[in-house]
Image 1 (spheres, rainbow, N blue to C red):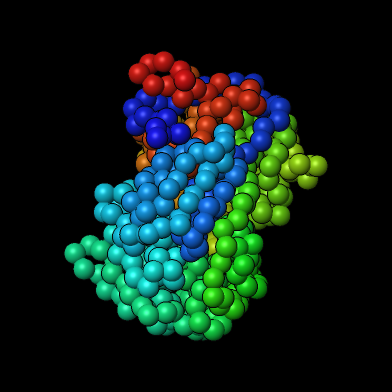
Image 2: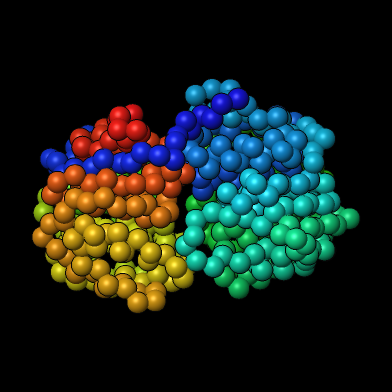
Amino acid sequence: MTSRSDRASDGWFLVAAGEPLSGTVRVSGATKNAGLKQMAAALLTPGVTVLRNLDPVVDLDVMLEVMRAIGADVSWSGESELTIDATGPLVPEAPYELVTQLRASINVLGPLLARCGQARVAMPGGDNIGSRKLDMHFRGLETMGAELEVVHGFIEARCNRLCGARIVLEFPSVGATENLLTASVLAKGSSVIENAAREPEISDLAAFLNRMGARIFGAGTATIEVEGVESLRAVDNDVMGDRIEAGTLLMACGIAGGEITIEGTRLEHLDMVVRKLGDMGLAVAPAPEGLTARCEHRLRAVDVATLPYPGFATDFMPLVVALLATAEGSAIVTENVFDNRFGFVDELNRMGADVRNEGRHAVVRGVDHLSGAPVRAQDVRAGAALVLAGLAAEGETRVLDPHHVDRGYPDLAGKLQALGAPVRRMREGVGE
């Protein structure tokens, strides 16, 4: 089967400033942050699982190959509908050449251990945005009775049957919470995950597992309780809308001005972002199928600090730095989640921004206007931030290495175009 994302690593985003944004756009499914994890969870049970509202991104292509390498039969059954037949037999190994491209590949570890009693998974890759160790994954699984070791770059794990346990995470890690959640649903006895991640994607995963027959309580809170069951069943499921894409479009409105409607998302999933944007002067209100945003004046600067959900998400940090670069006044942005996420600042400064960072802090002084320039995306959100900055830049901005953006956004240029923004995804000099 050919890639559904159909993206190339060459080309660029071509961006120019234009009129204020207007119109209505529907967000994509949360393929990267929710869909990939539910694909991994489908390995927990024999049978045919159907996931809907999956939009093609580059990371999905990699996960498809990971699933096939394990032995699942995966195919597209609709425009945004994926069918996963995990009847087996499964090969409980995720190969190096695939896993190193995608950090979400680590999510197969818990399901493979729970179903097969063993797993061999290469150490994962992903964006270079700082240390994201797997210690909490390992300690939690070991508490449940698994034996783990890293041998020649592979995580090798085995168990007779996982047993329920009380696990206290030292940090509310999304990845660790997901892996432990999927491991515990088939464990013998009850498990409690304390200091669990609270992101909406965790609640979406838990709801999916409960539809499969799991018994999970408290997802979305800091304490998740799981009563292990003997078996699960394959089901159909709709993946939630992408709240990060929704937040990206909100910040585009803040940079370019205008009035827009965003459908397919929930205001409560963006509560802290909406509060901060409200403090800056962007008016956001609920709508029947999502939310509306209105920006009539240049926004004012406010300080921002990233924290685990329900705090200000680290994924929004590069985007809000781009927004603050065009706002009135100065602000301090503090990154509390990852230790190497300000690498994009030099590229933003090439466009005339005034951003200075030291360690986990950046001082952003708003300027009256930015200047179009060739810049380079370094990861998913940093690349998107540079695209948004181009909406407030005189002249044309070229964002190179667009494949980083393609990893998380099915069609960022198309969504912005639908709102009237002059943005094109170019390849070999031709707009897509």
